[in-house]
Length: 405
Length: 91
Image 1 (cartoon, chains in turn purple, brown):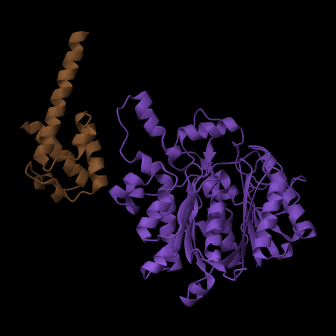
Image 2 (image 1 turned 90 degrees about the vertical axis):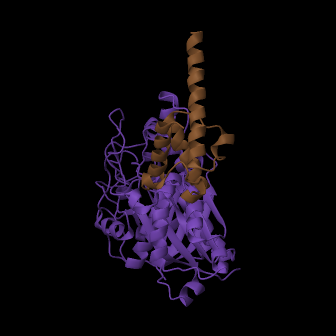
């Protein structure tokens, strides 16, 4: 059994709650929901009108012209978050060997597919004879991972994971395991997603899971999920090398568990998430009693929140009443392939600052959701360990465990 | 050489490179414009859009100077006009 341990030394984020970690943290702990009427797409024909959009993000101030020709919005978010995380961590690659020992593992559900509306419109409606030349490389799911690798010179294991709403947790978990196993010494990892396009909103509308109210996870009057866009990146490092260079350490990432429901394309089961949380705790070598906070998947759909509450009850037993639960999707929306990364940043900040972020928009407890929801106001509580859940359409579950360092 | 096409080509290159068009002439060698393969690909697209032509793969990157580029574009415009005229006669 390997004794290598892995720590989080840098954070970067771009989402509706904030275009950097400082703004994100402020709004997160103040419980401000960033869900508002959609501005970037005409939603007059849609049954829902709200999302958590990134505002005030100016690509031309962040990227050169040629870079913009190969970076669509989902990549721009990931690269911007990676720059913040790298700067925050102070990590430097002094030699070729250290670059070879650094992994880049990103995540996205749909990648650039949601950005193709303009091309289809040009080709099919306007009979344009051509698309711009970079549509293929800018749309590929690994566009951000490749760009981050080229920009930093990091040339260890580099790839992109796509498992819908669990993408980022799978990516971060695999990056963590790569370092713990000795395959890498550091990783730039996280995910991004840009679901706010006309065609994609229509597709979500047809699924009938999106609320036209707002996102109220675990609240009895919840009426569905609300989409969000964004990206987040974490810098993971092998603990000893991080200590040697005097890195600031936010938390230890110590457990990763993954399972499949093998059940239904959209209806979650209790068993799959239960096994994923248990696997993650086993991987961390932690007893359930050490966990004080769960950053829930908490989509605010009828099905998820009841299932997830049961799963938490089943894993934690009597201790469940001492586990505080919040879904920060109530504030930054459901960012799908980016969700696990943004929520990992929230969870790591919660551990480091000793403040648990609230579950915003909470009105009324639901007897079917028998968990201790952090209703609307943050709690100043220092927890030893925290769990962050992601459960995807297709029944794919990925759970991360972090602990205080 | 058609001066309108030459001027428009230079103008497209100048806009693309974000440089003063007075620094470009038909004698300018493309290597001196410091373009990598991505720039070249994007510039070919900009020229196709500007002149409403389709530049074949085998001609896209063979020119050495702006003047050769202008000649190539002239030929493509001429071919397209002949084709359009031919199609017109059939109707």
